[in-house]
Image (cartoon, rainbow over all chains, first blue to last red; front, side, top):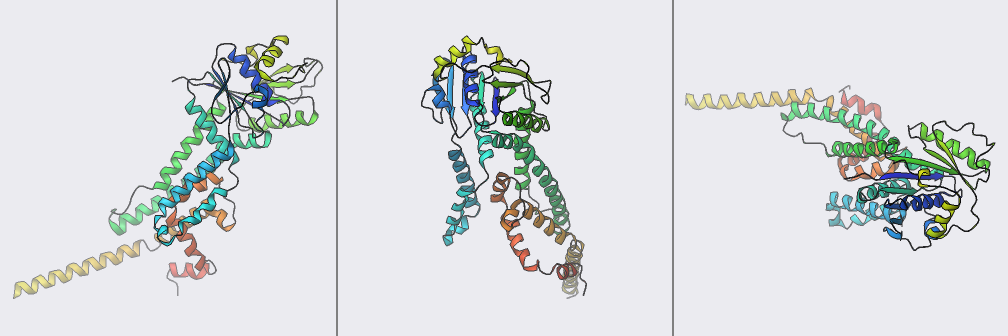
Length: 303
Length: 97
């Protein structure tokens, strides 16, 4: 089973992440690579850019090129319904008192946006092994950073809970051995679940850090706020050993001449995209833009 | 007759031995069990702390473990009864009067 190349496009809102994702998609598809562009941004600009009606399924927008939009709300709802059903099964006796309906409130749990994106990301990776490149158009900075931070933060909690759970099990074994001659000790389901979560987040963490399979692009323009935000994104990701591959300057006419690049790391290349003379709507216009500005697939391809 | 008496005596000693063994075993874990209970309580508080307003892990960790934590949640709510008198609880654990 081949592993698709993963490309993330992130940056400050309004800098052109969706346009860059679409340009990368068109450029790589022209090289006979099967490409799926996925919008994880709730703003969903991809359907306007590709001039196509996109949905939660892969929709063909050109030869070798597919696109889809992820609906966060649907994913959160489905996850919370699964949790609610598991709770209802565990506390099935409550149905005798008609009390199980109180679990329904779970579907309104807040704070699951980044987890919904992670679930969507994992599901897309699993289901698209026939694709050469998976391009993710990310939401604006705050949510994107939470997305990349999620496995690291979760693993800190999980490791702590695991240590505590192991201590509990050790004491349980002692009690069981002395009081019941070891008869009552059964495998701890909670520890099993913690171990599975740990594996899941570790694999995610490694996939973000693996520059052989994953490329991160930050898109910015000459707006000073976008520049400072980009520096913060790079520093934040660096702390998690996730390294940006390319810094894409959008609407940059001077091809970077005289630009102050201090504060940007040496390991990331800078690429300049001039302002388009026409609307970048439809794969035809995107292709024309690439041709006119001499931007080939090597700009996005590290395969 | 003698045989019956001996058999009764034997049963008596066996039962005495079993009771003494049970008492000794209970005594041996009398300090470990409350500690275990407290550890389970801490675990429940850490995972489901948002119920009582303390910082909790990312929501999905709490939600994923919630269906498996019936015992810990019962323990957590039971603890609310003794939460106001931690010292008296401690004294009763160590049998200090």
